[in-house]
Image: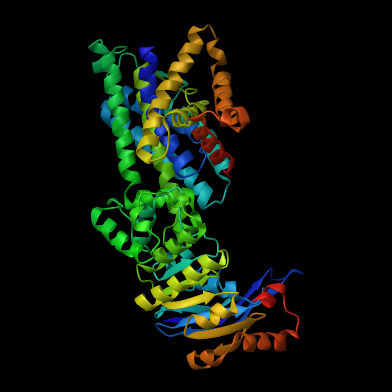
Length: 263
Length: 301
């Protein structure tokens, strides 16, 4: 479903700050596969997501979605294939607009937008049904401005908006990192449910190893722009957080950043 | 005073255009000063040359669309700062407007215009004229309300609110900004055409400082009448425009020099923007809207 082939990406090429973010990356996701990506800061996790979404263009290599080469398409042109949830809970929704207006925008993802009414009675009913699955009571607040919602509610809504129109690829960029543990658990659980329900091909970046092991059907670990570990579902089930930490120590000589230590 | 309300209701069409860029797209567009005169120039020269007033006024709208489209291109494709893009178009339009008009002032006094039937019936300066201009402003308001609630309009609203989000749903923010700027300046030019016909001449300087009148109408209107939902916000703009003209009229009647009006307008807008920052006024109800207007202005790039 998603093929990233021979991708290289270097930032600030030709300057003293030159940094290779991705080196010869090859990654293939089968339809329905849910891959979690871990790695320390600067390993290239976010870059791989941004290369897929079209926010960044690779220096070399190609990105193919369901057989279509999208390497040269801008982010908004790829949006018909891709649903995204951002790390910042404020990023995925429009605060000054109502819940139903936000959902109407998401409903038309990647389609040509014309002069038909954005929110109709029929769509409203559908939105309510979808919102019920979040179990946050948002189905009764269709006309509330999204800016009034809490971070957790907004992130749950972002997740719903990114997925309910069944994108070919779902990209999750540390989408629980900015939430308190309770809300992070809720959004984590909703993620598992929604991916399962729509059978979405998913790429999820996370700092949380426990979450990376619990969610998804495959796990990859990145370091300095390379994929250094690729576990399928069976291997993943046998792996523990301690095993992953051990892998990290092997590659980094025990020099772990604080955040990793805390996991 | 009735004349002030009449004028205010005609200028409301311009204010609605400013509302579209300033509030919806979050883009302070200075093209307005030029495109207003462009509208007046195009309509006047056509009427003088015998074109039907309705056609001439529509042509003015089209000319405004083009002016806004150019500012949009400069800003999005040319990656020029929004304020500067507007200034560039505005200044370029000064020369273009002179070319269109041929001279600095075009009188329309003996021509048949859209306003002639009202004038002939002796309705100008009466409540009937206020009703006519009020209905016109409301018609534009309702079309704008309708547009902003279509799929396209929702995408435009989101473009001004959260660009990254709307791009992730497949909308070209560049295209939305260009479209919004074009529509906005189309309305401004339409207003220019109506004002020229109302006052009986087009003048090369008639658009100078107009952006302030537009901003003042939007800010004052929304501070007083609210802006929670679009249909209220756009109504507030129409009422704000009428109110602004009444305030200017009162200032003139109080003996202020007409030449000082631009200064007074600027001071009015500054007051509307600064007062809500002071603690004393924060507690006053209704001014919280102004606060919002202010923070929105501060966030501008």
